[in-house]
Length: 267
Image (cartoon, rainbow, N blue to C red; front, side):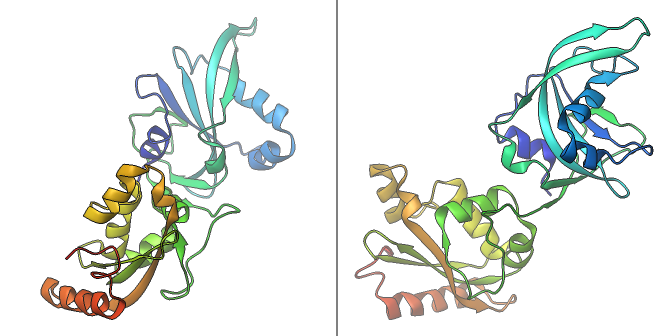
């Protein structure tokens, strides 16, 4: 499970700040249409409250309520100042934080915990249900129908795209990494609990080397070298296959492709 907290903290949200998660839902009007069609009016709606619900708060993470307890992320806002009006209402001046979160806006759907409370402190973890595709997003179609460059792999792993994660986490197999600069190949295998998803996540989180000796050496000389790698699947394996049987299949592909003699495998 990935939470909205993990997603935002990994993108730089200040863990030491006072932060509230806010779910806007109003039976009187369609707030998502208001947000899309008249942003200034929506922001005025968000910034005006009948009670001082954002007292002492540094940031709000804003959502619009959808069907049931689902909620759509629409942005992170820094509270700059507060004003109390004569009718005992409160107005907050807010500045949207855009750099780290723009590509997540309108795409991240969470399950809102405790639907009765529309504003909650960020310590209350909430599960990300879906991250809808962005314009540059490559959807999963078939195991043998794709070649992912490293940036695409990182996007898929970092954003936990559900179509890729669902399929690859139950899939064991033999995979290929192609160094597009030299043409050298690396053959690897995935037979752990989380299958290819687990193994490839490790590459995304280690800047491309996945703790492999020869790949790490390439990155030691150039920390950005991983951008030259391409990932694909060579063979699917039964879910019941043993580690020893998997390694035999991996060895077969290493021999076929000569990756020990001329490639990036060293065992």
